[in-house]
Length: 132
Image (cartoon, rainbow, N blue to C red; front, side):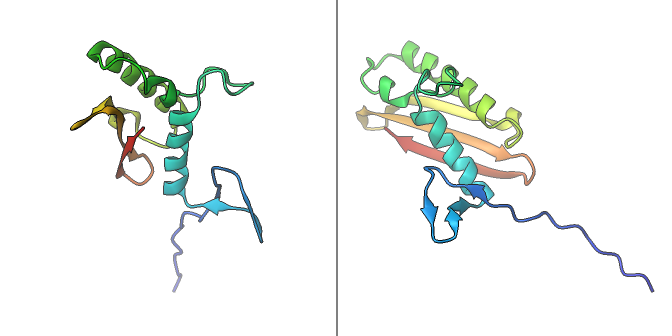
């Protein structure tokens, strides 16, 4: 009788963001947390901030003091979508990436960012709501 072994996906640790050292070396996180941290990096990194990737990032902080106008929110939404699509390529199903940017509900002084996507390898949907 032959026993068939099934293949399992290896458990890989991803470097945590922000980078920090623990007793066992660089701190690592699981895949879901790593993808969430990638989203945060895109949101809070301003274009031009990274020397070797000047186009990387959305720069959420610069949008906080913009006038509350729908045309500006559409521009911000499109630029965030583009930045996330590039940064998350291979991790998320690009057809499922949804981004909305605008004033907070009942809080017009708050920038509200909603991001929804499906992790490609696992078909698991994730949603993030971030107030800036």
